[in-house]
Image (cartoon, rainbow, N blue to C red; front, side, top):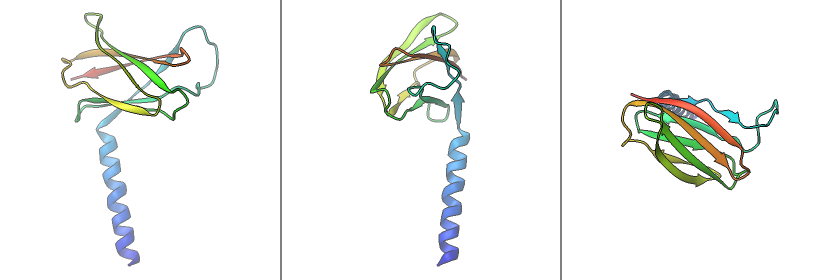
Length: 120
């Protein structure tokens, strides 16, 4: 029984590893006049999953919502404007053409976070 449990645990952990390989973390920088040297409590984590063509926003509920703006860098055109839960969500970007993009995330406390990603 112990061996079966260890085998199942090993398979599950391996699957999580391969799922994580398809996701690229988007590094966010805080924008604005704050000079803090710590990560703000309302700063989410953001990933681009090229296999699923989606942006994944992971948050802990410190902010009750986030306004999300995705801008196409080559044209400076807003491609996505939406609001997601303070606990995170996914955003379908399958309709966006290949290009470099900027994602701007604003918390309910007006903290602004910005990052870059590329759709190939």
